[in-house]
Amino acid sequence: MSCAHLLLLMSLALPMRTGAAVEIQRPRGVPLSKRQFYEENKPFTCLDGSRTIPFDRVNDDYCDCKDGSDEPGTAACPNGSFHCTNAGFRPAFIPSSRINDGICDCCDTTDEYNSGATCQNTCRELGRKERESLQIMAEITKEGFMLKQQLIHEAKRGQEDKQGKLTELQGSKKGLEEKVEALRTVKETAEDPEKEAKERHLKAWEEQKEVIRMEKDKARMAAAFLELDDDADGYVSVAELQSHLELDPDSDGSLTETETQGLLGGADKVDTSTFESVWSGIKDKYLSEGQSDPPAPVETPQEEETRDFVSDHDSDHYPEDYAGEEEDVEDDEEDDDHEEEEEEEKVPPTVPTPEKREDDEVSMPPYDAETQSLIDAAQKARDDFDEAERALREVDDQMKNLEKEIGFDFGPSAEFAYLYSQCYELSTSEYIYRLCPFNRVSQKPKFGGSETNLGVWGQWVGPEDNLYSVMKYDNGLGCWQGPNRSTTVKLTCGKETVVTSTSEPSRCEYLMEFTTPAVCQEPPSLDEVLHGHTEL
Image (tube, rainbow, N blue to C red; front, top):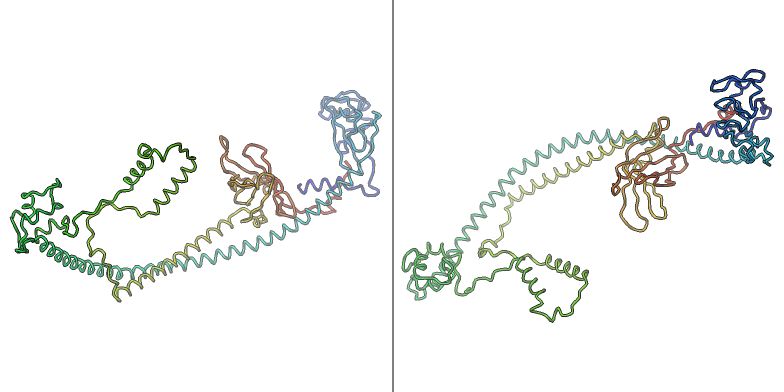
């Protein structure tokens, strides 16, 4: 209720002061505000100006004026109205058709002056009850307005604190930006010698590995030569090599004399020096006598799945496993999930690759002290740089949040600022409604279920003379074949901050009632009430 409305009701509900109750003569049914148009002994002009009639035709139970203004106290005109004085309560207007209809419409009984109806004047009792109600409302408004002043004071201090913090952060940001750039230079300067030292170390290790590999290859070649030289004559002949079918060039299962001679470079036999060139062509396939069979190929995941599918579902092979079997669908799904989990836990099989070289298993030696020192220095420079960048990002985030909050429209005196970052709930029989002012409105089923977005903060949409009395939240979750959900929040004066009710007056359009002291207006003083009190 606005202060103007409260002022009017209080003025009408106040009893007349002693000596002020003067009855001003005027025709029945005429309000005091229109007394000047009804002067006895003067012709009466219809209030719409349509015609002028003798005054004795006013309230003569015959309608002369089109607007019904000549019959304010009778039921003669269908469009007329009757004024109830209702002394001690609020004056009122009723349609003239209700005059003398046997039903008491005016609490002072003046509408039934000639009907014979038994009416009691209840204006004083009604006035007393309304005064009590208005007194309670006035107390709430007064206390709410006092709380509002505290909110304004706290908001002002909060805004000053936020502005000071923002200024402080702006200064910190400048220093952090300079620090980040300085540490970037330190990092890049430290990383250059680190990179060079690591490359030198890696190059030396690659060279060392190559030496080891060559030595192992020579030893393997010598062992193979001795193994192939069955007659120990110092030569490997075509006949001696021909027994190693794994060297078959065309993989037809046989190694012919011509093919073997080709492996030996066209010679019938080779000695140890010539065997070096032969070895380079056969070493990848060659199997020593202790390794007579090639390694079994590793099945791919697809082959395993195919095999499992056949073995699990081929009822022709295993009819006894499927006779009369009826499995629940959910059990099948659980078994499938279990099998998938087991497969995930298994190490995925690898595709067959050439025999791994032994030197590949040798770990790279640790860095020397000088290289490790350069690595440690570069890592420290990176850590310092990352920490400075992280601190700069945090300052940026804090500044953005402060600028956003400072820029919000929290009312003429920032009285609504205390609602920011707060949420208020209302529980109904089915749902829990949640209002987070300046953020969003949501609805969640009381007994489980996901939350539904009923709108995000839009703007103030109150009337021009009371803009900050209504909030609008738009672009909520879309309704099926309907608009996006939205919520209108009406604010009323109260000592507490609480959501009092919710409803859905239109599909997907919600209405929420919210009380807060921030919307309370300064109540009228007693002098203002008495000054505005007049006899209507």
